[in-house]
Image 1 (cartoon, rainbow, N blue to C red):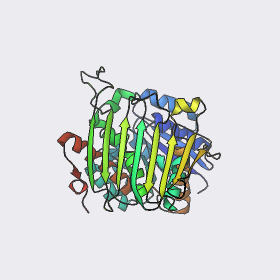
Image 2: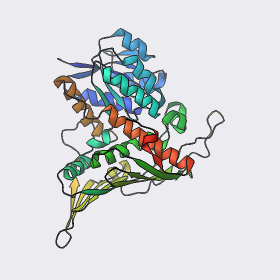
Image 3: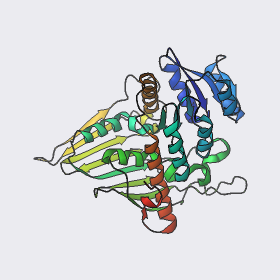
Image 4: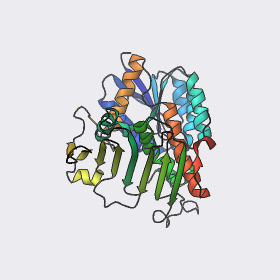
Length: 365
């Protein structure tokens, strides 16, 4: 292909980040955009100029044709319906996380994607953040030995405002542990090379959004939780989430511990980045004198758009384009997306019902 022509479905924050990425990627361009919100659509159109076609409905964009690939960046609860309109159309697809808001919808998407005549890739870009990518490489190389524990702490600011406040309600997002934390469950699965078998969680909405009203409703999204995830090998993982912890040195801390050592990736938030903070990779060994080294990790110099994720969405989109051109497989599969959602759904069920949840209750086969 001389040039990959993209359509963007959903021109909110992530849709516009992808537009900025594509402007800097060689031999790729945005040919069409769609969004029912006039304000979001106008802002995205202003980034692109006259060469792009603008649609209030994604179906009219698809009917117009001329696209090689489509990025689905619409609100979470619309993903299943939008994807249903894409199957069989011959376009390659990147769908932003979470894949869907329910396991049932994820399963339906998985079945359809297996028959689709194009690449299907799930946007779980945290894998591509430089410090995380280096931690993953070290874990695969055996630097920590046989991995027994993974822990991820995210202490950050509350959810940002989205158009129509759709992200204030679990019915639209799948719940905080799906919407936000599918990234982290994906990393746990990736580090351990296994699918989870059991989840035990405790969480609540204690601080954020309780004084907000939308159509007479109070938001119902959790703002803090602990989630324990168990794996077939006996390894276990822990998520520590707090979304009223703006005053944190690290926004994310990812720790991997094995029988030979410990790996840690520490990621500053955008305020700390503005103050000059750098991500760090910490390597610890159980060898003589227990040596520990700390390495600063800079953003990838090849990244032309850092966006909100240390350049990870740029790197992931570049890999997507490479796979389309080469005919290679998706690096982040629909099954990856399904299991990251299923773990979050299991965590919410555990909180709601006060019990451990077996993943076989949600995902069979």
